[in-house]
Structures are given as C-alpha cells and as structure tokens.
Length: 241
Image (cartoon, rainbow, N blue to C red; front, side, top):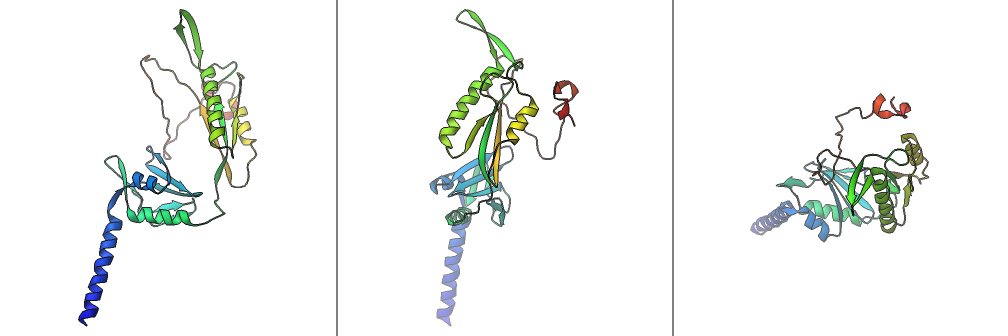
C-alpha cells in the first residue's frame, strides 16, 4: 500500500512539473523563430498568423481558441500581449509544432495572384508639388511616383514569388477609371480556392511641409462611412449606389 501511495505521489509530482513547464510564460516570437515558423502580426487588430509547411494558424491575442488552416477551431489559449510583447506558453508552441508536422493536401485557400494598382495616371495626375532641383523647377506628380513604386514592387514580387501571377493594372502613364480597375481585377483567371491580392499605391500630400512617413487607413468591422459622394465620384457616378 505504501509503495502504491508513493508511486501515485511521484506520478502527481511529475505531472505537476510538466504542467508548470508548459504553463510557464515564454517569448512567443523567439519560440516561433526557433521552430522555423513564419510570423505575421497586425497591431491594429491584435491578430497574428504563423505559417510552416503549408499550414497556417491564425489567432487574436488573448482569445481562448485559435484557427487552424482557416477551418478548424482549436481550444488553445492564444498568445497574449504583455507590456507590448507577445508571450505564450510551451503548450501553445508544442501544439503548433505538432500541427505543422501533419500532412495535408487540401489547404483550402492560397493567394494565386497579386494585382498592383498604381493610383491615378494619364489625365489624372493626383497630387503634385514643385521642387527646385539643380536650379530648375521640377513638378513631381503622384501618378509618376505611384507607377515607379508599382513597377519596382512588381519586380520584387516576381522574384520572391515565382509561382504566383504578379500583374499590373497599368504599366505606363494611362488613365483608368475605378470601374476599369475593378474589371481588370475580376478578369484575372484563378484556380479553385485561390484568391487575388489587390494592392493600390498612392502618395498623399499634406499642408504641413515637415510631414513625412506613411499613413494607415483602417475601418473597424463595426464602423461604416461614405467614402464617395456625388462630387468626389467625378465620372464614376455608377459607383454611388
């Protein structure tokens, strides 16, 4: 009886030790990188995505569940934000690593094409600014900057993702209406369960000449606003409805 009692105590001690190790907070990013996982983070929505071996796990920081390959809900505590840093436990990382080892040929979704849309063009110059360069007044137009950035991005993406279609709405200085840009996107041929990523490039102006950096526009799911009206739509009246 004593031997059985001590055996049970030893088993309980071992279980509690393993449980404590699994529950111990760990640096999520360091753990993911060590395991060879690719990590994407959206600070606006506090949501993350980790990838490995063709599988994906998406999560919202602090939730009690994660989503595997966009179709299976797993009751697993997601990483949490503490003092601006993502932390998790060994249980989450071990669970993710085991999932990434599984073989599957039915991943339902992938990006099959990326369509780059340099804003403005042709008769629509976008914003502009006159700069004095080498004693000459040079007018920089948004449409030209958008196009140069778009062409460079196309070249980078073609090199990084040779298996995907990398397309442009325009590769020269021509005017395209919003309807035409939409039609180009909708005309791209995709395989089953493939999606297209649409990237629109713009350069905004500011009355404060010392302003620099970049802007992020974000519409939360519970908020709607009118971004077009009869005046701003111009020739695109068909878009108002």
